[in-house]
Length: 343
Image 1 (tube, rainbow, N blue to C red):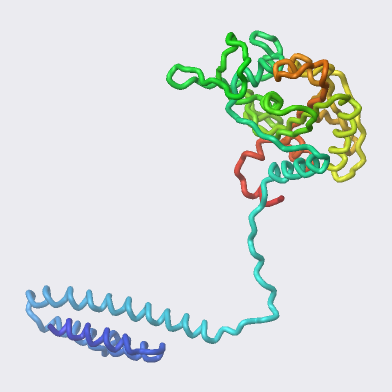
Image 2: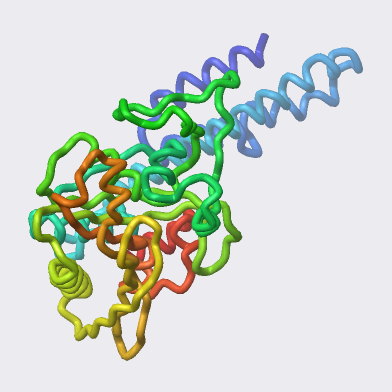
């Protein structure tokens, strides 16, 4: 048929056309006012109704197809010409490469580890899914003790109705259950470490903790905490005072800091203290600490007459908020890249 012949000829010539001028000539040849398809369309009026019904749609379809092909080839030719004539400006500044950003909690965690390892502390870790024994009992917080109300706990439902037994301790009283929970603090790492290591030593244990409480600008259901522990023959609060003050001075880049120590209660230390610092003319409570309670040493298998030590706990999120002046703890967990890109 004549339409098939015109289509083959047009495609073959379009394939050979090398520039925009050649393509435009072909466009006029086939689609112009006096082009081959336009002439055929004019002859439709001389045909019968049946012939018009057969030939008309084919001609219109061919016209639409060729219009699209010519339009695309002209656009490609124009792009090729623009690319060929483009001259590189060697004096122009290069494009800034977009780089990833570390999360502020990651930055603070790395800074804390660096400071304490420089003071000969070892970094240890423990499981986030913990047992009741390690999270409470071995830390001198037995069942029904009122101090347990200090921690709003996420209790876990045991699989298949059975309780998973804890590892690493053979002399645990059989009456104490191993109910599972999400650890409410990093203090259980103390017991796990002391069960397997003999003093003297000094460790820190950074990690994520969980508490079932209302979320607001200063509270989250999960947050990061740092636990510290030093045990030896003659470890005292004087040693603790030196370590903690040296840490905060380095962490806040040698800013002017004043320290206060206020008596407080924590079940696993005796005596207990709160560390309060004055930074930028504002007093802030930043850490709970004290001398390790003799009962905790007994649970770990130490003789409290032979060893003594101090322990402390501090919120990594809180330190990050103070250092970077972040007003809301929920921003750390929002997933908003605009927030992360500031660091």
